[in-house]
Every structure is written in C-alpha cells, then in structure tokens.
Image 1 (spheres, rainbow, N blue to C red):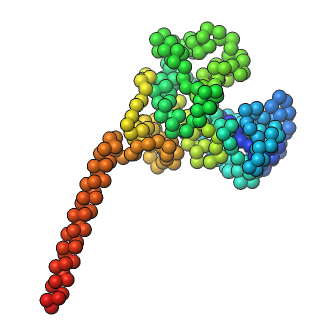
Image 2 (cartoon, helix red, strand yellow):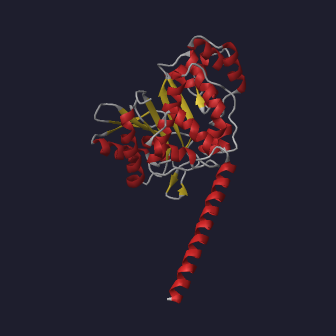
Length: 329
C-alpha cells in the first residue's frame, strides 16, 4: 500500500490563488510562477523540482471571510504533483499553513479528489475495485457524509448497468473495460469533462490519465482527515490488486460501526498507525464498535450494572456491621 503513488486535489476558498501560491512557495523556500491559461494557474516548485499547481475551479463558490464575494480569484484548487507515501506529512503541513496563515476555508461547494496510480492495475483488479466500492458504497457515503446534492451531480455511485456488464463479460484486458465504461464510444476518453468522470469511483481518469480517481470526499482543511482519505484510497486500491476476486453483494448491517471497522481492518488499516484513520472513518456511523450484535452491548452493560449494584450492597453490609461493632465497643 505504501509503495503506491498518488496525487490529491484540494478545493478551498477564503484566500486568492496568488496568496495560496505564496504560502506554498514559502513552505518550500522557492518562488511562484503565474502561468495564467484557462485555469489562471499559479505554479510552485518544491525542492525536488516537482510542480504544485494552484488553479481556478469553476464549481467553487468563492468566499472572503464569512461573506460570499463572487470574486473568481477566491476559487482555489491546490493540485499536488505525483506523490509518495512520505509526502503525506508535507501535504498536511501545507494545508495547516493555508488555513492558519491564509485563512483558507471550505464550504459545501468544495471537495477533495484523490488519484491513485493505475499502472499496476489489470482488467481483473479494476473489476475487483468496482465490486469492492459497489458493495460498500452505501456505508462509505454515510461514513463520509456525502451530501445528496453532490451525489446527484459530481459524485454518483457506480452505474448498475456498467457493473452488470463488467461482471458478466469478465474482460481480460484494460481495453475491454474501457469499452464497457464508455458504452462502446472509446473516443470519449479524450474529452476532459466527459460525464462519466462524475462518479465516486472514476475510471475515466484511468483511461485518460492513468489514475484511479476517488471523488467522494467533502471539502476539508483538517490535516488528519486528509491523511485518512489518502490512506483509505491507497488501501482500497491495494486490496483490489491482491485479491483474486471481490464480491459485489451489497453490505447491510444492523451495526454499521462494527461492520465498517471490521472491513477497515481487512483493508490493512490496523494497529496504532491507522488509529486516527479508523476514528475519522467511523465517527459518523451508528452502532457499537466492540460488539457485532448491539443487543450484546446492552446485555453487557446490564451485567456490569448488576455487578456494580451487588458490590455496592455488599459494601453497605460491611459498613453496617462495622458500625454496629464500633457501637458495642
């Protein structure tokens, strides 16, 4: 999992693109370049010569402070270069500096997109990742609090017809998957804004950029949440690569928190290293983390309460006997 390359796009407002570029340049002790173009791009090189871009994203509703100001300069998207696992700390530091020093903020128009290198993926592993996402997407959307308006437009769930064909035909090569994704019109992969891209699991980027894109994250400038989202995407991608096959059967549970936690552990997000990730991915789900059956938790609480009451009664008896003994003395 940690060997996989990735990239991240973080949407925000509250500051201008130039201000964001200057803060990032200060972090790396480098300069900025205003490349302009259709996205009014600013770029910053890090110490390794990699280019971080700050671009305009039309979908962002701009704000300055607590007021909407409709100034397009406040539509800010930070696009990382190709990153490695060790770069997560750098991303976190940049996000903190943008928030603290630039007063960056997010609103409901903002989101986060994470791209994972698809070069090692095959037709089999792409089918796996589609099945994995489909089976868990209801829980994932609830865990991430995906807003309904976002789900309808920019972050759709996996298309049922595509998944049905993918599992029926079981393609042997990437080109066959591509043909199914575009419903036979593969020239669509050259269209940057092809409608097929607006899915939580976006295969359009596989065929146009060589990355698997995950689009289901709400905007945030919480460094811990951003690290969690990156780890989550890397873990899903890795699981799709190492599994022989994956079930597409929808996961239903009377104890969402326990079920999702069990799945996270199977993904490899286990131990103290991923404790924070599990916290952020479980905090919005209902249920008991320790017991599969919620009724077991209720029964355990009743047992503990009963034991405590028994102990208290025994203690009161001892105190009463001691008091009587003292009076006799």
